[in-house]
Image 1 (cartoon, helix red, strand yellow):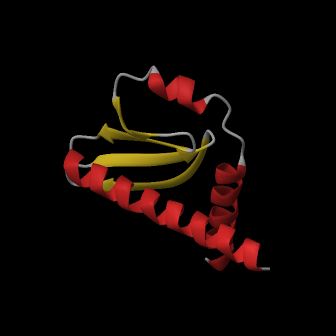
Image 2 (cartoon, rainbow, N blue to C red):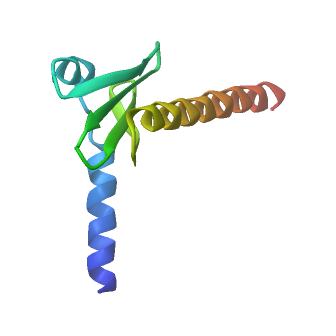
Length: 100
């Protein structure tokens, strides 16, 4: 069983490490998706699956975070919270690099 878990984990890592070319273009044309956030670095979408709202966040056209929420408003709040965390992390990393 442990081998199956390792295989699954490795395949998921490989999936997320694959480059995602032109993600913004392909997702923007999907009528089932609603854009929740868009700036120079991040783009986020949500999709109504009827029993939940699936949301995804992309940085430079690469999937970096995904999750689900019970409502569209909850998905928007979750996305904003995660992106704010990423922005704070980036600022802290830059400050640390300046000090080093």
